[in-house]
Image 1: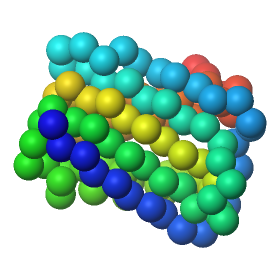
Image 2: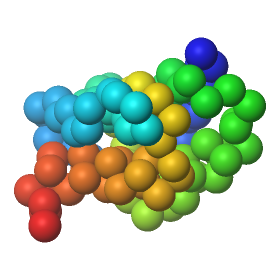
Image 3: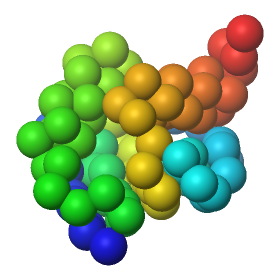
Image 4: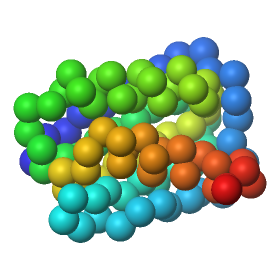
Length: 104
């Protein structure tokens, strides 16, 4: 298992107070927990992954996510069992959309 942590400053979009879980940890998938937290306008993302050695890929996916959503005062935890970057992006988007009431 590998643990990665990212922090993005100066977000502009706040989330509602409730927490949201999206996805299921299992073969080839992941779970995302997202919650509002007092972080001085930052968004933190903590990742536990079975796919060791993909830090650069994770960083690119997390930066892309932050650029799209610009979350502030948000804490995100990801438990991964080898999901592809596309699935990671999908689950993150689902979590935010569900919290904001924008679920497709």
